[in-house]
Length: 343
Image (cartoon, rainbow, N blue to C red; front, side, top):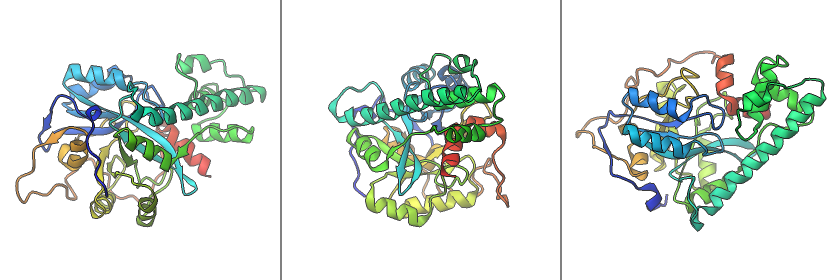
């Protein structure tokens, strides 16, 4: 695959990590469906020695600049990111886009900024419509202002208010209620458009949690090859909180055989919801970090980058796979909504 050159926006004060330094490149805040504030997230990361992190809220970068500023004060490099909801081949895919600051005003960043503005506007329109439909059905939402807390109104806030008022028990049923009333709760953009716009801005595009069946669906090897034939994605999130060693081995192999980058992310939305930020080893996503301006000391000759058993937090295989708990459903709002949409 063609290698993009680094841009000034991806570069800052040089930083070099040891191979075992902890990094987490998939974190959410209150800007989307998380409950970490930028301050509480950075405090948590700083207390635990994280060197690099990426804030990747769903379809918005509203928390990124604050997190970058706070991170710099604690000696943590915060990579600007966003998890964009996209559509390709008749289904949704979550795409992690790294390295594009939200305060850029140059022409190269304009298409990507326009794409995020478009999906934000669509979500706000859907939220107002869902709010009206729920209340018109005889289910008042007096707590919506409290739940929304002054943020742009998104469907997640409307659905959360419906849960808070006792109209539905969880996000799945809240989403189904909105659909039954003729509304919608999600929005997406064509994958090819988002990748093209991100690349024009010098960003790096990674398919989020390709092995997570309870989200938008597992990516198979055939899916990946078909996608690459049409769209030049840059990599896969091959280390993820719910992956067994077997899944990590699979997605590392798929990435390595195709010259793709590898990312590591917990997808943490709040303390212990679904999990705390995970201390992934910098060496496991060394090439991606390098693309984002972060160097990692090479491993000694003959040392394995990753092997089964190296991640003590990796879950053991479970059969059958257990569904997410209600608490995870709340924290994993966008994934749950996408899953309900697919059904």
